[in-house]
Image 1: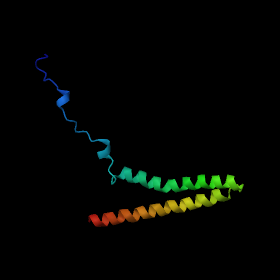
Image 2: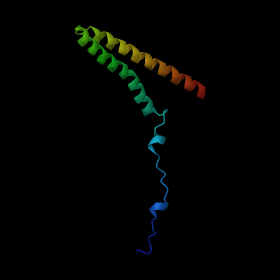
Image 3: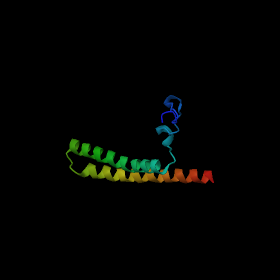
Length: 95
């Protein structure tokens, strides 16, 4: 029975599995979705922390928190708009 099975030489086999670097295609939909969500959420988080810190420093409880939170929302939408413009331009160049 052992004679009928071909020997398997693991050292000579080449793996055709894609590496992590080759799978991280910047044009893939999951990568684009992660990028869009990070570009939208990051300014809001920074605004919250900056507003919270300024409120503690100046003893004005919700004032700076609200101001910087809304500025973060505006910056997040601005990032989404710029990304949409960039993607639209890339799609037009491909056609």
